[in-house]
Length: 409
Image 1 (tube, rainbow, N blue to C red):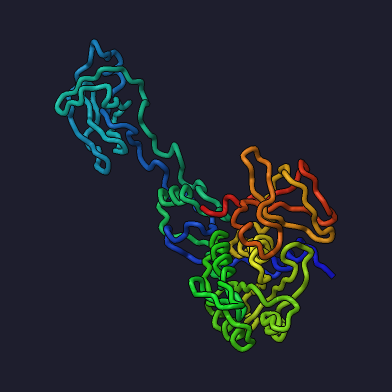
Image 2: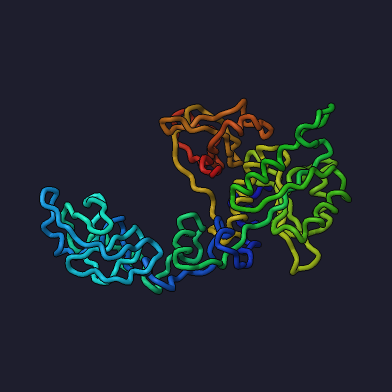
């Protein structure tokens, strides 16, 4: 009996909650999800200030100034940014002022330095400026009590800017989940190791660590574990106090040496099933831990790299989102025309590797859609989704497409 992709995803997500919020310094909060509203304790700007380098004056003093008939004023003070403006502006006088500096009492407008001779004891004003020009008024951007960033926001650079501006140095956020990635298989060796017959270079763990980090987790790689129940069990136990989520690849099919399935079946806490998808049919998820309070979620993925990657997109990425405090829904899909005909198993949902063309159409890539064809995965920037019940699509048909181009950022 095959389980649908949607039902299997829901089964994983129903057992997960967001991690407990923690307080982090502002720089470390980047990329986390805010767990509380940030409210302004002071206005922005917090004081009236100049938006130009120039001179603070009375508008009436410069109303008739022109290039041909300049007005000369006495410079009575100089106010750089960060200084106090203690000398008020009075008729016939000007205060030289820099961008961001507080405007002196009595200021009606700022004359940009470009409309002057730049004088320091006296200044020639060579153009009229209306009252209010080039003055930033206190609170014109944000007033006290404004919510500047709401809980649930994924914090980007622009959010950190306003949070810092209103004086918050620490934030309550949902932390990035720590994801331990383990590949299993006695045939696996580290990349760069000369291959003897029957051995392959481990790629899955690098694939999944990168994918988890792209999804906003803090993922780390555990060296490949051989097909040995005792070694695998020890590797899992070693991660229980380090990880918020354990992700494995390989060892979940029906073979004689499928160690992951063997060990977790003995634990009795991980459910293995077949999902109606291609590639990626054999799947498993559940929990491990020494007690109910210490249980850690586990998601087991197939060993073929393409199966592993597509399973990650469908099941692990939503799980990471939920643990981060984000919506846990499916990735957005967009419609596009397919350039070539494709067959698909009618009882499964196919996720075919594809590539966007300049005109917005998509074409299948690689030398076939086998779960081992990792070269085609590297050429792709989208997944073409052919739903259950559809055995064939023709060139020119409109299909749903998962856009992968924004994963690297």
